[in-house]
Amino acid sequence: MSKNSSIKNLQTFKSIKIEQMIPKIIHYCWFGGNPHNDLIKRCINSWKKFLPDYKIIEWNESNVDIFTNEFMSICYEEKKWAYVADYARLLALRDYGGIYLDTDMEVIKPFPEKFREYEFLAGEEVDKQVSCGIIGVMPNNIVIKNLIEYYDNIFLLEPIPVLLKEILIETNKVNSNNYFIAKPNVFYPKDYKGKITSIKDSYTIHHWEASWKSEKNFFYINYINKKIGQLTKNQKYYLIDLHTNDTVNLKTLKQINDILERPKDYAINNSYTYHNIQSVFKKQIETYILQKFIDPHKYTLNTFFEAINNPFLKNNSFTFYLKLLIKSLFFYKVRK
Figure 1 (cartoon, rainbow, N blue to C red):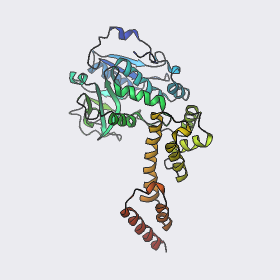
Figure 2: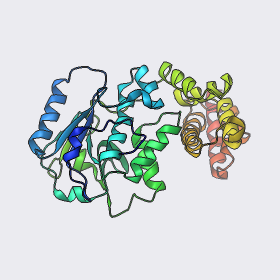
Figure 3: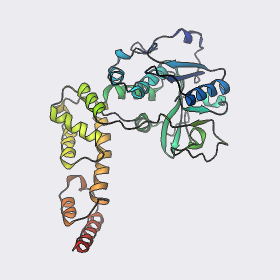
Figure 4: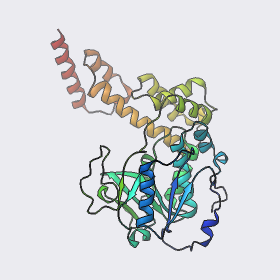
């Protein structure tokens, strides 16, 4: 177990034999002290039914030292239990290995021993999008370690599936023989709308009751203020704007671009922090271009002229500008 872990050394684990396989442990997190609802009870009972030789461990306030970690401490004070659980599950997986399950993940058949032979086990919720309702790893897995280090250094929160996909790509683990990323039908046969296509090849059903949703405004403002005390009020404002608004304006994008071009001037000396801002920044640029120039509420001649002088459109082709000009002229004539 890591010396810096916030996970307490449970007596339960002393009898577990260390082997080069994913240990037969099921981890789940439950913070806040609320009672389990009927769905959660059903799901936990399914684990006991189909995985009877697995040890089931609930991680909560009694066995996680929440206030020894800045991320968990801030999130716990804000009563954002899902974010606390995001981090706690990573600590449990790093220190002990095993399989993490969301509390709304129902097991419908026993897992084959083959699953335990992989260093890392997860599944796609849709094609090419890794989800985290189930994660299986051997102890001290490098991807889990990277996720923890990422969380220790970021302040623009992103859902674990987004971070996980980026880290898998960065560490070249996506196509590794020891890393099994199952197709959606294996662990996620049910979509967000509740439709199930087929469970013939499925081992679990995720009911999406606690799926990650973007929580904005007060929580992010408080989180960013606590996390990045070295930045000025205006710099924090731009970062909050970048992260909490569906569409940001050109002024905000320019300011964030300036931070990324001169990170040391803004006391951003950590590569994880830099890439975190860069990742969110890129997504916002894509949204900005889409809503401002590709599919705006209305086109005007100003739309075309703004595009010509826009620094974030300089890499677009001549065809892009030609189409934009035609659309602007067309809508201009229609309005006349």
